[in-house]
Image (cartoon, rainbow, N blue to C red; front, side, top):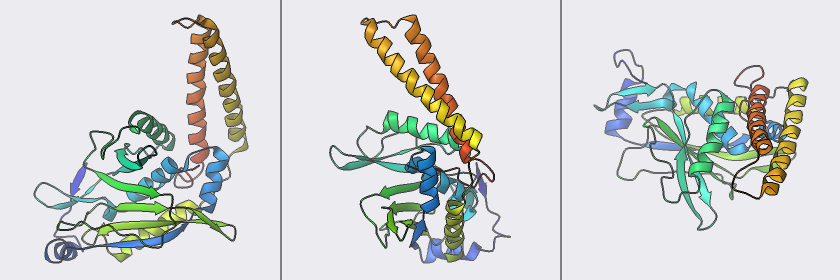
Amino acid sequence: MFTPIDPTTWPRREHFHYYRNILPCGYSVTVQLDVTKFRAMCRNNGLKFYPSFIWCVSHNILAHPAFRMGVDGAGNPGYHDMLHPNYTVFHEDDHTFSDLWTAHDEDFAAFYQAFLADVAQYGGNHGIKARPGQPANFYCISCVPWLDFTGYASMAVGGQPNLFPVITYGKATEHDGRETLPFAVNISHAAADGWHTSQFLNDLQALLDTQQQADTSLAQALREAQIRRDHAQKYFEAVSQQSGGPYLPPEAEACRASLHQVEQEIAQLQGQLTALGDPVAVDAQLD
């Protein structure tokens, strides 16, 4: 949903007009994010970094209207209720990348599974757009995992700077027991001033710093479910190979149904573990 801004009560109406029409410009800010606790929690819970970190950024964007700004067909500014992440995948075979998108969901487990499914379905497609149907309310996020950079900027030559944020982060490195990574934000000055971007970055760091102790019973249940999944997977493979025909025997079909059920259980438990306490806590985990 897009909600227009009432210009008569908007304190930034002159700022928006100035940086949109008179002096169109954007800016870039690069900071070092401390991801020590975040990475540790991801490793402990067996979650991948990329989708978890993306969820974390998307969740933080919801709390900052300046990062959800857009314009309607007549050029009037307003706020989207949500931005969906448009992210990149790298192709090892030809060293190119493609971008695709996953609809943001405040339920971390739901987003995490949707992300993995989207990458599995579209991640092998080459070309700029790997998944069709990208919504209009999106933001860009990508990773340069080979480089620990100190500055990054993107420019829209001859056009308007993007109102939505363009985010790039880099290689995580360890110094004195702390893990950090470079995190760059590019955004139009018409959408956000230095104060808005500072608040966004400070809140993101606070989210990453929040460490919740996982409930031991949930953690134990997760470990047991993972063991059952591994056993079911091995049994399914063994029975399928023994059948030798195009059709699976009944015991293999039953095993496949059990495997699907335990996978859903694991996803639910991972979501519960990461959503303990304040939902901002560590609902995003990484690998």
